[in-house]
Amino acid sequence: MLFQFFNPMKKVTVTQGYLPHWDQEAATYFITWRTADSIPQEVWKRWQKQRDEWLMAHAINPAAKDWHRELETLPEIKRRDFRRFSVALEDEMDACHGSCALRQPAVAEIVKDALHHFDGIRYLLGDYVVMPNHVHLLVGGMARNMMLRQVASWKKWTALKINQTLERSGRFWQDESFDHLVRSEASFAKFGQ
Image (cartoon, rainbow, N blue to C red; front, top):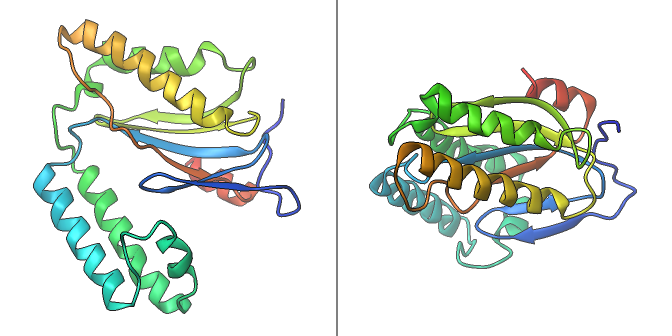
């Protein structure tokens, strides 16, 4: 099994949750998912309001299903300006809000073990890091849509085990995950740093 990167000649499927997700058979993905408490609700609402106001100021309806496509029609300088919202949100989430349960070695080990469990069988695991309130990883070799199912499986299993370990209940992970189809070997190396 080898890491494969985005191939513009192969079929791509884009699905839409809160964020768009690109799928391509046997591709490699950079994936991030976060704990449910990784960003305070008031910070999330403020960020979303500012982002939506920017979109509306550029004649894009943020409630439209295809607002991402409309954004792509803007000049590069405007798209670059819009990216500041993603950077600001990432910075806020990396500020270690919430309980940061993944900081505990036993809890981080649950995630590590889950990631390695089917490595080389269902997927090819690349570099990964378990941060105090989120996980980043590179993974490849999965058939189309299998990546999304695998992420759901990791999140479900680890949430169950982590909640048992912490003697708690309730949602542990955010519903959405961020995934980025790796487009080149250079991008793969950058994500792996």
